[in-house]
Image (cartoon, rainbow, N blue to C red; front, side):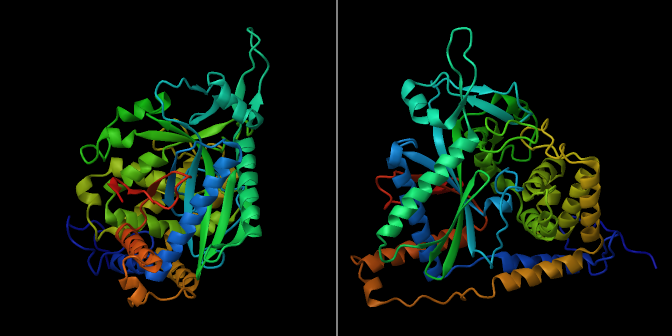
Length: 483
């Protein structure tokens, strides 16, 4: 008996008889499983959980304010980027091999990545030297030679110097490893000081760990365990010349958001290329731009991306890690450029999108080629050995041959990881909550506000503007909305 055609009419849901040619899975069943997995992964927070997350966030910002005051290294009025999901979730382009394994449900309940600028180069008159002569595409050394004496003096102990040039001037290169070491020690010093004088109502630090160049902090606030992966970065305004060619191409976001929104800034992350100098090399990151681009990705494709990320999680258990969720994120953005918007806009076609992402990832592994979305000349899988590529391609093939079973397994794992969490209960206003002048009323309003932001913006990234001298006033930006 012939299998019916795979491609349905535009605008129609997968029919009951439509099958995936490779696995024989019914597309309607895959669609149902993807939706069920999405429902499990969707974290709904009641007022209490929202207040606990708010308390943990304020604590982290207070700690960073105290770090700034230790030796005045960090900018006084800094601009952090708070991303939903930890580094291990692929929210930034960092290598995962040096990170210890954390599992949601076992080690934490909610996770975030916080990019903290060690240097904030937002003044267009500030001369900057990105030295890419020694680096692979998408990476650079950062020279402090053209900086003022005050900046060089503050950061000299976090630099690697080179031989003096013909003029006898030393060239200091900002070291990602030394910066991250200093940052972890500074955070640890502040936390130890706070532990000597504990205050009622502040979160308890369950774990502080330095993995590679990431400082991971697990806070316990009430019944919530919140993981913050805090990464010291260098923040720039504008757009790097090495990615200028990408702007000249046509993209899926053209006409949906402005170019100014996309190229508002970039970062240097403390991670190097496989053959780069670990002590001096940084990686260019476009995390701020990705926040904007996510607004243009259809709900169906984003749902498929989240499901695909869950399916490949077992591939990430091996070391070295050949595939990371960031690779998958890049493939999703490339697919948005390649495929018609009318096709990707179909919310009920996430099964097609999931299978397509698995096929794209398989293609990348077989060919050892996964171009970075912003700097295509950077092949993110170039370092893979032939044997590692074949091994991971075979593992992925087993997922592709039975996606329905792997989706069921992912749903079961997600159910187990969230089983201990308290169920959301309707809020019961108390007398103090009805008093607009009381502290608890203020906390209640903050909880309601935070709950609304979380539930209305699932998976979105949040920019946070903070003055360490006044951490009591939160300034949120979710995409282009300010709060």
